[in-house]
Each structure stands twice: as structure tokens, then as C-alpha cells.
Length: 205
Length: 332
Image 1: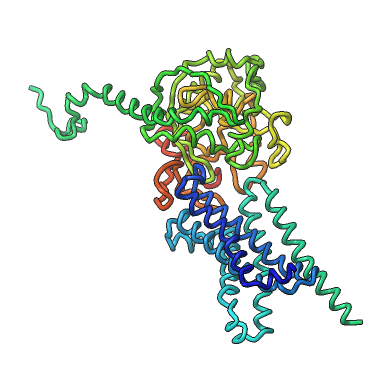
Image 2 (image 1 turned 90 degrees about the vertical axis):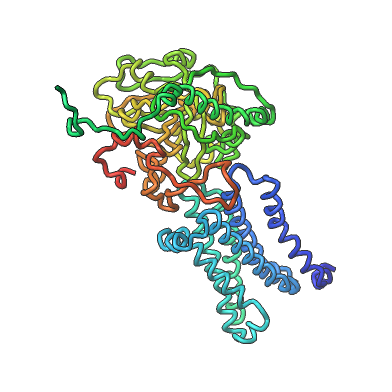
């Protein structure tokens, strides 16, 4: 039953529409003045939060698919990855626009000067590599083996994203949320290590 | 015969530079108009503010705190005063939570009466004073200060209080006292943020004696014509306008005179990011962001450029001499 619903094209559409709701809310909140006394800061932070959330959801696809043996989940992985990219793009845009006033020299200097920005920038660049190679044509052109290798970058992106968030909060010793996201991503990456080793052991015997 | 020349030691102004007698005669009126204008801007926001007075759902009407306009140099900026709603809903007061909207929601639990201030350390007679008595030690003045947060945003706030120096003179520190340390309230019953363990509570701040004695250092009891709202540090806080906001401790319970530079809270928690002095300085960056610019809360649209941060937050003329010869990069 669930698998039948997941197979319907409308399921993917529904997922994308629901996933764009935070974006829609932020847009309307700008005009309705619901973002508090410092809207720029709010937008930069919330787009960062949503990037992290979608990264977690994207990395949840494979564990769910394998654990519950529902191959249909795979249909949503690309959409979720692209949604993560969409939110990181917004995050970078908000930073560049509201924090730096699109002064390219200042932005370049900021990336070089501050590890916290550099790490976030590196993660965003990697994510865009994954986004541009997300099409079927790209997979065919690269070959599945090389494509898979490249897309393992998502694990590095997860680590860099946490580091970026950690450094951002370090100045105020305010790590509660950082640890929560680190724990979630830790479990999701840890599951993969566990899954790979048990599978290897099984195929070895 | 006395012949006056241009070489007689005086610098003669051009006649065009001499203020006309008409303008000169009107100077007080002009100043009054300016400050009335500034007050009117502040007043405009009063109309809509009762609902935000003290969080916790119920609107609390705060007591008025009468004050005269300050005559201290630099104490009355004519910039647009920040809306009361913004100044009372966007606060860093970690004792009540780390989100800037937390203090307005949570600070209603703070018990501000009775309130005492303990003056201790190197003073003639260490004593615990009642707030009501301390409030009588100086004439209440309104001062409109720029407030620059280390995070890169700023406000303009009409504070009410008197120069901290009035209190210091009153309690007679010993000659050996070189620094003043401020201990703020830390009550785990009423302050949910204390469980967070972000820093070692209570929150400690400090000033060098000459900084504390500077007339701009304000012992503050009110803002916007009323006593302080709880989320802004009721019933008594410090405001040191040329330093980043966190130097201005809220809800002060102890003032301690000491010989050695105190280890203040943020410098202890993150020594690579915060120093003892923490003077506003656009040329010394925070490790994770530039301090060259600031976003004035409530000013302009999202896409407007940030404003340039001024040396000593624009109080350079008044305070730069305190730091003559000091390396401000090293002593950040």
C-alpha cells in the first residue's frame, strides 16, 4: 500500500511542494514583517538551519530504504538532494546579499580569512558539484562507478556543515543544537559504516 | 598706537566662519528643538509598546522614571531612537535563554524588589545598599547612546541613570583599587539560562578605574522614560557606550573594587574571541566576522547597506585619551 503510493508521480510532487513551504513562509514573512527586529540575521540563520535539515533528510533515505526494504524511497533521493542544494544556495545568497552587500572582494577576503566561512563555502561548492551531476545524462556520461565515488562527497559535506555550525556557535558556547544535528548526522553516517562492514563480512563468509 | 597684525599670535577666523549673532543667540533653542525631535521619535514608538513591556503574556505598565536631559559631552546623540519594541524584544541576556527573543519571553520571573547592591573589596567601608538609596545618589539624567553589539548590530537607546562615578565617589575606594568588577544576578530559580552552562555564572564584567570614572559610564535604572524592563537588565545595569554591549552588565548585585584586572566572563569562556577591553573598534575584527560595519536595528530595508562602525562607537573624542599609547589590537 505505502509502496504503491510512493510509486505515484504525485508523491514526488507532494514532497517537493511540502519541502518548499519553509521557503514560501520566509518569503511571505519578509513582506509581512514577521522576521523580528533583525530580518537579515533571521534569513541567514534559518536558511542555514533548513540546509542542515534537508541534508539530514536526504541522508535518511538510504537507511530507511534498506532497513524497511522499500526501494521506492530511492525515487526521492535526488529531489531531496536538490532541495538541500536549493536551501544552501539561498543561505549563500542571504549571506552575500545581506551580510556582505554583494561586495565580491569582501566576500573573497572573508572566505580566505575565516575558517568558519571557508568551511561553509567548501561544503556549498561540493554540494553544487553534486547538484550539477545529478541528472541521468550526467550519470551516463560519468559512468556509475565514478558518479558514485563523486557523490560520496555528501559525507564530507555533512562533516563540514557541522564544523561550520560548530564554529559559528563557538563564540557563545552555545552548542545544544550543534550537538543535536551532529548526533543525527553521526547516526546516519555511522549506520552506513556499520552497514558496509556487516555486508562485507557477510559476503566474505 | 597699537597696530594689530595677523602675526600677533591669535588665529583670526574668516568673517564667513564666524557664527552669526542670530544663530548664536538661538543656540539653546536649536538644541532644545533637536532633543525634542529625538524625544518625539522615541515617543512615536511608545504608543504601540505596552503589549511588549515585559513578556510572559501579561502587559505590565512600567513606572515612569523622571529625568533631566544630560549635559555630559557626547551623551545626547541626535540619531533616530530605536523603536521600544525592538529594544525590548531583541536582547542578549543569556540568563534567560540564548535566543534574542528569549529574554522578553522569560525575564518576567526576575524578582527586582527588594534589590540590594553589595559594594565590597577595596573600599573604605564595604556595605550592602538598598536600591532605593543608591538611586538617590545622583540626579537622574536621560542619555541617548548608541549601543553596538559585538555581533554586528546596533541600536540607539534613551537610557536613564547617573554617572557611575557618582556612586564610586560616594563609596570611597581605597587608592589600591585599580579595577571595578560587576557581579550580576544568578538565580537558578528564576533564570532558566543558568542550566545551559554556557559560561560560569554569575556573569562578571569589569572596567579599569579610569573607565569606570569616565562621565559617559552610566549606572542605569531606566530607559524610554520608565524604569528598566526586566529583559533589559532591571532594576540596575551598566551602560558603557564606547564598548561592545556585553561589557554593560545587567541586573547588577555586587560592585567589587579590586587591584588586579578581573577575569571577565566572556574573556574567560572564549579568550581568543573576547578581551577585557572590548572597545568598539572597526579595525580589529572578531575572529569570525568583520567589525567594520553594523546593522542598525529598524533602519532601512533588507537590501540597504550596513553602516560603518565608528571608532569607540563614535565616542572617540570623549574616550580616546583613556587609551593613549595602548596597543588596541593586543588589548582587544
